[in-house]
Length: 246
Image: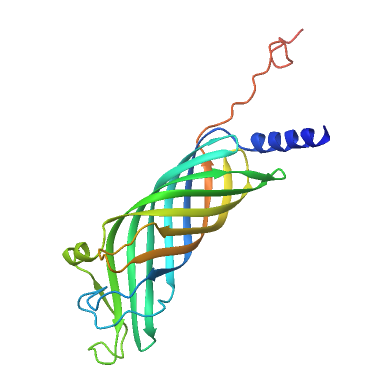
Protein backbone atom coordinates (compact mmCIF):
# COMPACT_ATOMS: atom_id res chain seq x y z
CA UNK A 1 0.00 0.00 0.00
CA UNK A 2 2.89 2.35 0.82
CA UNK A 3 4.50 1.72 -2.59
CA UNK A 4 1.19 2.39 -4.36
CA UNK A 5 0.79 5.74 -2.57
CA UNK A 6 4.39 6.67 -3.39
CA UNK A 7 3.88 5.93 -7.11
CA UNK A 8 0.68 7.95 -7.06
CA UNK A 9 2.44 10.95 -5.51
CA UNK A 10 5.24 10.75 -8.10
CA UNK A 11 2.75 10.69 -10.98
CA UNK A 12 0.83 13.60 -9.50
CA UNK A 13 4.08 15.57 -9.19
CA UNK A 14 4.95 14.92 -12.84
CA UNK A 15 1.51 15.85 -14.11
CA UNK A 16 1.16 18.96 -12.02
CA UNK A 17 4.49 20.50 -13.08
CA UNK A 18 3.69 20.60 -16.81
CA UNK A 19 1.05 22.97 -18.18
CA UNK A 20 -1.25 22.03 -21.02
CA UNK A 21 -1.09 24.17 -24.15
CA UNK A 22 1.10 25.41 -26.97
CA UNK A 23 4.62 26.79 -26.51
CA UNK A 24 7.42 28.31 -28.61
CA UNK A 25 10.93 26.87 -28.44
CA UNK A 26 13.72 28.95 -30.07
CA UNK A 27 17.18 27.44 -29.70
CA UNK A 28 20.75 27.19 -30.94
CA UNK A 29 22.84 24.03 -31.13
CA UNK A 30 26.66 24.13 -31.20
CA UNK A 31 28.91 21.12 -31.56
CA UNK A 32 30.69 18.87 -34.05
CA UNK A 33 29.82 16.80 -37.10
CA UNK A 34 31.32 13.94 -39.11
CA UNK A 35 30.29 11.26 -41.60
CA UNK A 36 30.24 7.48 -41.64
CA UNK A 37 31.14 6.45 -45.19
CA UNK A 38 32.54 3.74 -47.45
CA UNK A 39 35.29 4.21 -50.04
CA UNK A 40 33.65 6.09 -52.90
CA UNK A 41 34.82 6.28 -56.54
CA UNK A 42 37.59 8.72 -57.48
CA UNK A 43 35.19 11.39 -58.80
CA UNK A 44 33.37 11.64 -55.45
CA UNK A 45 32.68 13.81 -53.49
CA UNK A 46 33.64 16.80 -55.67
CA UNK A 47 34.28 16.16 -59.35
CA UNK A 48 37.00 18.79 -59.58
CA UNK A 49 38.73 17.82 -56.32
CA UNK A 50 42.01 15.91 -56.41
CA UNK A 51 41.92 14.63 -52.84
CA UNK A 52 41.20 10.98 -52.19
CA UNK A 53 38.73 9.73 -49.62
CA UNK A 54 40.21 9.53 -46.11
CA UNK A 55 40.13 6.30 -44.14
CA UNK A 56 38.84 8.18 -41.10
CA UNK A 57 37.11 11.53 -41.79
CA UNK A 58 37.70 14.07 -39.04
CA UNK A 59 35.11 16.14 -37.20
CA UNK A 60 34.40 19.80 -37.99
CA UNK A 61 32.32 22.50 -36.31
CA UNK A 62 28.53 22.21 -36.53
CA UNK A 63 25.65 24.54 -35.69
CA UNK A 64 21.88 24.18 -35.63
CA UNK A 65 19.65 27.26 -35.04
CA UNK A 66 15.97 26.37 -34.74
CA UNK A 67 12.49 27.70 -34.09
CA UNK A 68 9.98 25.10 -32.88
CA UNK A 69 6.38 25.13 -31.75
CA UNK A 70 5.03 22.45 -29.47
CA UNK A 71 2.05 21.25 -27.52
CA UNK A 72 2.32 19.93 -23.97
CA UNK A 73 -0.23 17.77 -22.17
CA UNK A 74 0.75 17.01 -18.57
CA UNK A 75 4.28 15.54 -18.84
CA UNK A 76 4.10 14.69 -22.57
CA UNK A 77 4.94 17.06 -25.42
CA UNK A 78 5.06 17.04 -29.22
CA UNK A 79 7.32 19.52 -31.04
CA UNK A 80 7.82 20.53 -34.67
CA UNK A 81 9.16 23.51 -36.59
CA UNK A 82 12.22 24.33 -38.69
CA UNK A 83 16.00 24.29 -38.19
CA UNK A 84 19.13 24.84 -40.25
CA UNK A 85 21.84 22.20 -39.75
CA UNK A 86 25.46 22.19 -40.91
CA UNK A 87 27.19 18.82 -41.32
CA UNK A 88 30.42 17.65 -42.95
CA UNK A 89 33.95 16.41 -42.36
CA UNK A 90 37.61 17.25 -42.96
CA UNK A 91 40.52 15.23 -44.37
CA UNK A 92 44.25 15.68 -44.51
CA UNK A 93 46.64 17.87 -42.54
CA UNK A 94 47.04 21.62 -42.08
CA UNK A 95 48.93 22.23 -45.35
CA UNK A 96 47.01 19.65 -47.38
CA UNK A 97 43.50 19.74 -46.01
CA UNK A 98 40.05 19.39 -47.50
CA UNK A 99 36.91 20.42 -45.61
CA UNK A 100 33.51 19.41 -46.92
CA UNK A 101 30.43 21.22 -45.51
CA UNK A 102 26.76 20.45 -46.16
CA UNK A 103 23.71 22.52 -45.28
CA UNK A 104 20.26 21.13 -44.50
CA UNK A 105 16.85 22.71 -43.84
CA UNK A 106 15.23 20.39 -41.29
CA UNK A 107 11.56 19.82 -40.39
CA UNK A 108 11.44 17.56 -37.29
CA UNK A 109 8.73 15.89 -35.24
CA UNK A 110 9.91 15.19 -31.67
CA UNK A 111 8.15 13.35 -28.81
CA UNK A 112 9.29 14.11 -25.26
CA UNK A 113 8.47 13.15 -21.67
CA UNK A 114 9.19 15.42 -18.71
CA UNK A 115 10.47 14.27 -15.31
CA UNK A 116 10.53 16.87 -12.55
CA UNK A 117 13.26 17.39 -9.97
CA UNK A 118 11.84 19.59 -7.24
CA UNK A 119 9.80 22.70 -7.98
CA UNK A 120 11.98 24.30 -10.66
CA UNK A 121 14.24 21.72 -12.34
CA UNK A 122 13.28 19.02 -14.83
CA UNK A 123 14.72 16.54 -17.35
CA UNK A 124 12.99 16.02 -20.70
CA UNK A 125 14.33 13.16 -22.86
CA UNK A 126 12.96 12.97 -26.39
CA UNK A 127 13.26 11.23 -29.74
CA UNK A 128 11.94 11.98 -33.17
CA UNK A 129 12.35 12.00 -36.90
CA UNK A 130 12.97 14.72 -39.48
CA UNK A 131 12.96 15.35 -43.19
CA UNK A 132 15.64 17.62 -44.60
CA UNK A 133 15.98 19.56 -47.81
CA UNK A 134 19.70 19.48 -48.55
CA UNK A 135 20.59 22.84 -50.03
CA UNK A 136 24.27 22.82 -50.98
CA UNK A 137 27.79 21.44 -50.51
CA UNK A 138 30.84 23.67 -50.06
CA UNK A 139 34.45 22.50 -50.28
CA UNK A 140 37.52 24.22 -48.85
CA UNK A 141 40.72 22.75 -50.23
CA UNK A 142 44.39 23.70 -49.87
CA UNK A 143 47.21 21.78 -51.48
CA UNK A 144 50.89 22.61 -52.12
CA UNK A 145 50.28 22.34 -55.87
CA UNK A 146 47.34 24.77 -56.05
CA UNK A 147 47.38 28.47 -56.83
CA UNK A 148 46.13 29.52 -53.38
CA UNK A 149 48.96 27.79 -51.45
CA UNK A 150 50.17 28.81 -48.85
CA UNK A 151 47.22 31.18 -48.47
CA UNK A 152 43.82 30.40 -46.93
CA UNK A 153 41.71 27.54 -48.33
CA UNK A 154 39.62 28.35 -51.35
CA UNK A 155 35.85 27.82 -50.94
CA UNK A 156 34.14 26.14 -53.88
CA UNK A 157 30.35 25.64 -53.73
CA UNK A 158 29.25 22.64 -55.74
CA UNK A 159 27.08 23.70 -58.72
CA UNK A 160 23.44 22.69 -58.37
CA UNK A 161 23.48 20.33 -61.37
CA UNK A 162 26.51 18.53 -59.93
CA UNK A 163 24.92 18.40 -56.48
CA UNK A 164 21.83 16.73 -57.96
CA UNK A 165 24.03 14.11 -59.69
CA UNK A 166 25.83 13.15 -56.50
CA UNK A 167 23.47 13.80 -53.56
CA UNK A 168 19.83 13.31 -52.66
CA UNK A 169 17.95 16.56 -52.12
CA UNK A 170 15.64 15.04 -49.45
CA UNK A 171 16.78 12.68 -46.70
CA UNK A 172 15.34 11.26 -43.49
CA UNK A 173 16.90 11.68 -40.05
CA UNK A 174 16.53 10.37 -36.52
CA UNK A 175 16.88 12.72 -33.55
CA UNK A 176 17.78 11.83 -29.96
CA UNK A 177 17.97 14.52 -27.29
CA UNK A 178 17.90 15.17 -23.54
CA UNK A 179 16.82 18.60 -22.32
CA UNK A 180 17.61 19.80 -18.82
CA UNK A 181 15.50 22.74 -17.78
CA UNK A 182 14.85 25.38 -15.17
CA UNK A 183 11.35 26.76 -14.66
CA UNK A 184 11.62 30.54 -14.27
CA UNK A 185 7.87 31.14 -14.01
CA UNK A 186 4.58 29.75 -15.31
CA UNK A 187 5.43 30.75 -18.90
CA UNK A 188 9.24 30.66 -19.25
CA UNK A 189 11.66 27.73 -19.05
CA UNK A 190 15.41 27.79 -19.76
CA UNK A 191 16.60 24.59 -21.45
CA UNK A 192 19.92 23.03 -22.50
CA UNK A 193 21.15 19.55 -23.33
CA UNK A 194 22.83 17.19 -25.80
CA UNK A 195 21.29 16.34 -29.17
CA UNK A 196 22.30 13.70 -31.73
CA UNK A 197 21.03 13.81 -35.33
CA UNK A 198 21.92 11.27 -38.01
CA UNK A 199 20.72 10.30 -41.47
CA UNK A 200 18.64 7.14 -41.79
CA UNK A 201 19.82 6.41 -45.34
CA UNK A 202 22.77 7.25 -47.58
CA UNK A 203 23.29 10.84 -48.69
CA UNK A 204 24.96 9.91 -51.98
CA UNK A 205 23.40 8.45 -55.14
CA UNK A 206 25.75 5.48 -55.39
CA UNK A 207 24.55 1.91 -54.98
CA UNK A 208 28.09 0.68 -54.26
CA UNK A 209 28.93 3.25 -51.56
CA UNK A 210 27.26 5.16 -48.78
CA UNK A 211 27.60 8.30 -46.66
CA UNK A 212 25.71 8.89 -43.41
CA UNK A 213 25.99 12.43 -42.01
CA UNK A 214 25.91 12.93 -38.24
CA UNK A 215 25.85 15.91 -35.86
CA UNK A 216 26.49 16.03 -32.11
CA UNK A 217 25.47 19.33 -30.54
CA UNK A 218 24.51 20.94 -27.24
CA UNK A 219 21.19 22.73 -27.75
CA UNK A 220 20.43 25.84 -25.69
CA UNK A 221 17.22 27.84 -25.68
CA UNK A 222 13.95 28.60 -23.97
CA UNK A 223 10.34 27.48 -24.02
CA UNK A 224 7.68 30.18 -23.85
CA UNK A 225 4.10 29.19 -23.08
CA UNK A 226 1.52 30.77 -25.40
CA UNK A 227 -1.31 30.43 -22.92
CA UNK A 228 -1.80 32.59 -19.85
CA UNK A 229 -3.10 31.18 -16.59
CA UNK A 230 -6.17 33.13 -15.48
CA UNK A 231 -6.28 34.38 -11.93
CA UNK A 232 -9.07 32.75 -9.95
CA UNK A 233 -12.10 34.99 -9.64
CA UNK A 234 -12.89 36.12 -6.13
CA UNK A 235 -16.33 35.10 -4.92
CA UNK A 236 -18.98 37.71 -4.37
CA UNK A 237 -19.16 39.04 -0.87
CA UNK A 238 -15.43 39.43 -0.36
CA UNK A 239 -14.04 42.58 1.21
CA UNK A 240 -13.31 44.22 -2.17
CA UNK A 241 -16.88 43.65 -3.39
CA UNK A 242 -18.57 44.68 -0.13
CA UNK A 243 -19.90 48.24 -0.25
CA UNK A 244 -18.46 50.57 2.32
CA UNK A 245 -20.69 51.34 5.28
CA UNK A 246 -21.07 54.87 6.62
